[in-house]
Image (tube, rainbow, N blue to C red):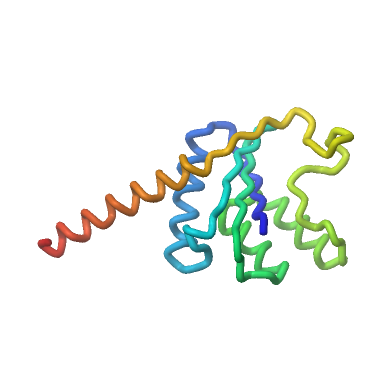
Length: 141
């Protein structure tokens, strides 16, 4: 399963902060399991987008995927278009970029990709460690 999130952000640090925050929330409420995230890919065209590759994803209903992408910060217009395309019965409703903006080999025109899996997972782990230390300090451990 690939979650596609169009963040419409221009600053890479903002992407890291938002994605870390949203993923922690989704992990806490058991929508995503940290150990099932196999890859996170940062895509830069005019602004940043992200693809999150998840193994053994239990949400297979298209509406659930659209909602989860929205929770993770997907652009509201893209969420609306995805939902419309899904309701109209399009098979390829979950496009990240317009199909007309691709090279003949299927790659995106002017899109730079970077694997940020380790970076984001490390940020999540550090946030969790900090939270655990604060919780232990409050408990007097």
